[in-house]
Image 1 (cartoon, rainbow, N blue to C red):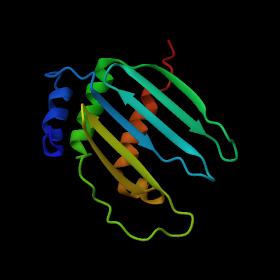
Image 2 (image 1 turned 120 degrees about the horizontal axis):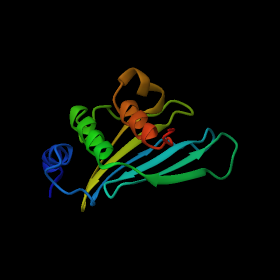
Image 3 (image 1 turned 90 degrees about the horizontal axis):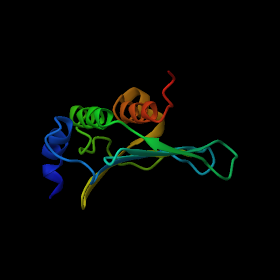
Image 4 (image 1 turned 90 degrees about the vertical axis):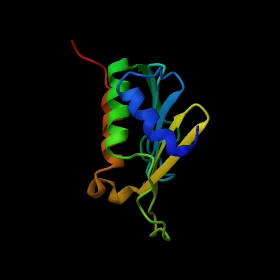
Length: 142
């Protein structure tokens, strides 16, 4: 598969027309000084979340199951936001500025996009995917 067919595969996953054990989404905004989040949602129904607080050498790690319907919803969001397209232009970073990256992988094809962390809220793109992934890692209260 080439990166250009990623949109079609994500649409098939979103519509439950394709099995998705070889699908994953990874988000990373961990900064050496400020900490941050590293998240991975796998098509096999699992998530892993590493959260490192500022000044803490080791992250807190959580993992658990995710429903197939949530994986399909995440795939729909990736399609809606065209998560295979790099939009932010490259430039020299400002002092202490960092990037947030998002990697979408299906089988051997992986596409990574990024945004400047401080511009994510304004852009409303990768932050929406991050927030959806974070919501999936929260325990369900009955």
